[in-house]
Length: 354
Ligand code: NAD
Ligand code: TDX
Image (cartoon, rainbow, N blue to C red):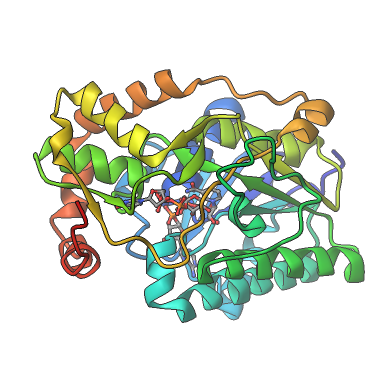
């Protein structure tokens, strides 16, 4: 790709927003390992989901900088762009948890929509070679359980269910409008559910691993028949790298590996792997507006960019469980703090249905 060169060095400079969170941090590790000559600036507000200890291994590297900043802070964002003159901006920063969006939608609208607008305004002002928006398959809504032949393609209409997915769709529309109106060189990826190291314990897989390790009830929403399409986080990071370097400007790429699983089957697999009894599984009140099935058709990214996932679900889940067993300190610090109030608020009042 033709890239504007950084004033200070010849290496590409990336601003990676939300890099202290789950996928952003994994993306930073991927970048530092595969492109040691490029500069990575992590911009993060360190919300409850952002964790500086996650970035410990890269913090002291000369080609890494951490900038403590809110993507909604226009002046701060402008200052950082003026200092760094980034070539590429990848926007992971978001409020990302559907259940929280049902409780407090406004935070989601602020960060996910207005924060994105702040970033793309800075991109217009300072000039970049690529703005990449990390979106989600949730913008397509859901698919019925009795139509396994249906998948989300890039042409599937946006049809959102939760304040979270509506805010992500709003951001996608804005990013595309900046491409059409101002010619901003953008790409968007819409990925299915990720799992792997550093996944915040509020999400299904880490929550179930951690609860099972404590012999606590495993709260499955409703009957647990909802289907998600799982992708190991490193495969998502590689897909973003491929899209930014080789993808066509103004295009959306769906990312997924045809790994559909029912929630209940995931939780059973976790019990099996950890040698815990399935009677820990507790069916509780369903999520409001709960999407039934997500399933990505990844043929565009495979055909155009030659991307294929490398980790199958069975191996990925084993690796993930092992990571949580070996990194107790990381998650124990999280679950001993504010997370306890969150858990009580979200699960304390959920009725057990079986
Ligand atoms: P996460 O919640 O683990 O991390 C979000 C990060 O963004 C945190 O470090 C947080 O501090 C930071 N952040 C939040 N608000 C900010 C703000 N106003 N300014 C600066 N930083 C802010 O999220 P994740 O699971 O890593 O998801 C990353 C991105 O990928 C999100 O945009 C999400 O919509 C998208 N996505 C996630 C999945 C998934 O399965 N987790 C799948 C597809 C797409
Ligand atoms: O305690 C739980 N019990 C349960 O049954 C939790 C936390 C979840 N679930 C169900 C709800 C979903 O059907 O498990 C499924 C997965 O839930 P989450 O981990 O909350 O993920 P999901 O709602 O599918 O959204 C995720 O994938 C798409 C990410 O959080 C989003 O950021 C991403 O865009």
